[in-house]
Image (cartoon, rainbow, N blue to C red; front, side, top):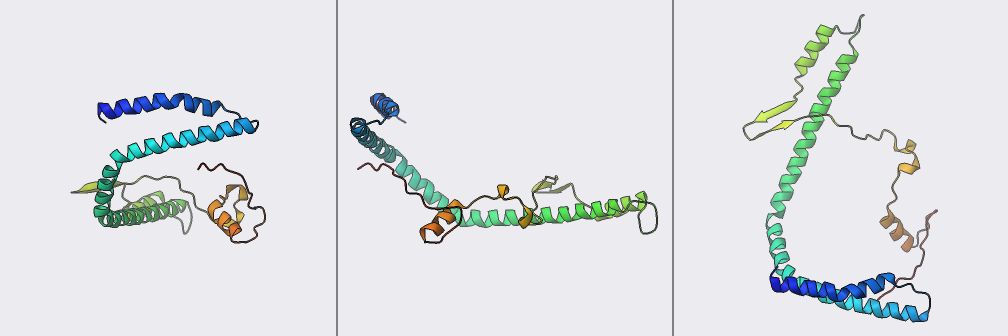
Length: 193
């Protein structure tokens, strides 16, 4: 930002400071304070529009350059990100399956018929070849276990864990669908002209 633009921004901040303070301290208690709030709202909107337009004179060309460059690479990036996600999922699935097989083998280490000795179990686990790290000429992949939620029966999960899709619920209510436990409430908002 040039010194001229910075000086302009500082001057505007100084100019609007009393306006903002008055607006933030106003309590609407009667017709006079309601009129005062409408006047303050209009002044605030005028200043905000001016600032937004000033900002656009600098940011619009930069945004166009950024949007153009992002569009140029969007398909390639999306394709690569899809491939990366797929490969990570496959690697995770493969190693997770091997870890489950290791746990199954370990659970069979007991005395008696049909069970495994420690030596036999160790040999079977070693034969699985579960990787902790895979190194290539272009990089490496390391594996670590993390906890991940697995819903085994959604009907048994308490409702306190469910998230309401408010946008879908509101759209359904607006379309006339009756949904128990929800309704459309009409509220008043101010619209400055």
